[in-house]
Image (cartoon, rainbow, N blue to C red; front, side, top):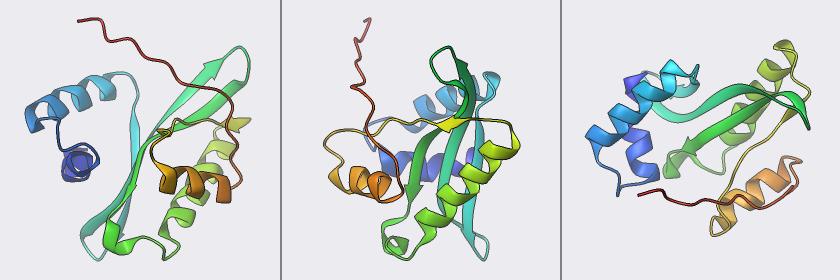
Length: 129
């Protein structure tokens, strides 16, 4: 699982590697899973994901930290990754996939909408420090 750390670092360079390692370990304790996209032996893309159950939607898959290295984007790998996640979700008995994408990530939002995903609400956060 630690092979994804370099890609996670690219997602948010402001987070230190020690913090990423600690958070990843905690996420794995909560059944965090991951799928990778490889070219030969090089990890070029990934998506973490959770299987969750919420009253308003039921059992669903939540992709987390979906990322393809920039030099491999626009070649259909993102679509293949999402297709894999959707098939995994169906086999796991999920009735939906839900995810978060930052508003400022216009390229990401465009990708998700192209894949058939629609905005449902606004994700709020309050830091408790």
